[in-house]
Length: 289
Image (cartoon, rainbow, N blue to C red; front, side):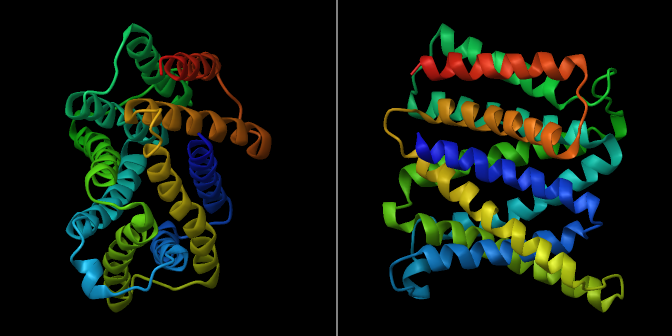
C-alpha cells in the first residue's frame, strides 16, 4: 500500500509542476525531453546491479520498453494537441478515463476478482473523473473533426498502463524495475532528442536554461511515479483493477486539492460533486479487496 501512496504523490507532483510550467512560460517540449533523460538516469542510478547492455538487450521486456518509450512521447504530443484543439478538460478526461482499459484487461486476462461493490466503485470513479475535470458549467465539448485526438489519448494512456501490468507480471524481475523504467524513459528521450535536433536545424528551437531546469525538476518525480506504480502492482493482496482505480482517482483528488491550496483555483459545483464521488469510489474499491 505504501508504494501506491508514493505513486499517487509522485504523479500529483507532476501535475503541480506542469501548472508551474504555464506560470513561468516554460517550453513544454524541451522540458519533457530533458525530463525523460533525467528519469532514465534516475533509473540507472537506482539499479544496483552492474549494467551490461548485451544482457539488458536480451531481456524479455527490452523490445516492449522500446515501444513504450515511443508511446510515452507520442501520447504526450497527442495530449498537447488535444489541449490546444479541445481544451485542457478534454485532455484530462481522456487521460484519466483510460483507466477503464487496464481494468478490463486485468479482469479478463488475469481473472481478477470482481463483484457488485467493485463494479459500482469503478463506475462511480469514472463519473468522478469526468465531473472533477470539468472547468466550465457546460462540460466537455468536442468537435467531430477533432474527436480523433482525445480518442488516441484515451487509447494510448490505456496501452501504457496495461503494458506496465503485462511486463510487470510476465517479464520484469524484482530487481529489474529500475532498469526497465530507465529503458522506457531512455528511448523516449532518444526520440525527443531527434525532435529537438530537427527543430534546432530548422531554426524553430531556442534552447533555454530555465527549460532544462524545469525538465530536471519534472524528471525525478516522473521516474518514481512509474517505479512506485510497478511496485504497487506487485502487491499480492491488491489486484491491478483496484490499483489503477485508486491510483488514478487519488491523483485527481490530490492534484485538485493542490490546485485549490497553491494556485487558488476555484471549483464549480460539478467539481465538488466529483470530489465527493471520487472519495466514495476509493472507499468502495478499497473495501472490495
